[in-house]
Length: 310
Image 1: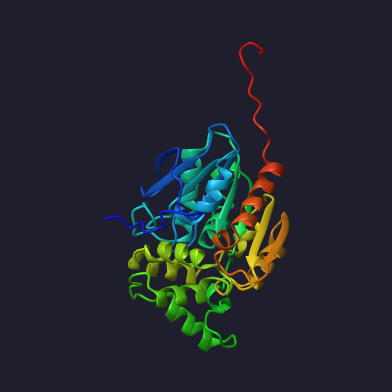
Image 2: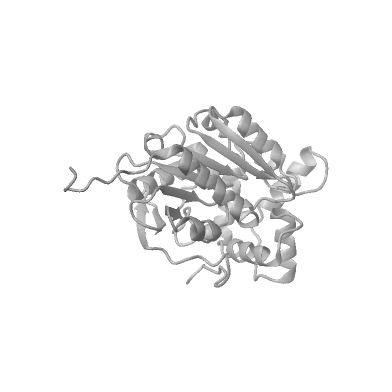
């Protein structure tokens, strides 16, 4: 049964990949990988967040694939990647290493962009040899490294134990999300997006999030609740840009500021007024530009030498 309920027209309709492959992680988990754009072009790797899929990056894939090789993959249990009993920060790091090995040539470098749990994946992998061999630069979108539930402002009361308890109950709910109804859109918009988000943006997010299986959603919520990747941030020793929306309730700007202060090579923190947690959908052009800037600054063009000139 297909779990893919994404929109099928407009800017957030996922483009067809040039090819697909399956990466196999350290524990045997199989990961769906899509490759878009011309072979030999500068490489970009996209890691989506909790309850999302490769469809989340549709706008960036469509724009970047004209002159980049864009590699997007489904986190385990999400999209077309089968669920796995092993869910942990270490598994996320294993999976990213497997994707890099499967999709990139030996020694080839890429800009790696991670949104929310995708950014946490990058932090978890920061000390891995495979990550360091392939990462030229990183973009962290709407993410944090620790204290995720305590920092969240989804529950609109002052910080403290009651807010943390209520937030944990909401984000860790086992309840099915059900169909994408007007009420479901309003709830999702409040929790994850800025007040000014256009209806077509909300629709795209709702369809992607509601496609995530209930058990997968709950299992990963438990992992995120206990996550502590502060050490991984300090070991992320490549140029790294940080983007956050000022209206982000899931990983508020305080999280992004903490990342920017701790990163060894932070190239800049961008705070987007009125934008919520879903930055790649709410601010698609800005996210795409940040990726392009990192490619231009940190990936050397490949010089092809013909037999005649050799």
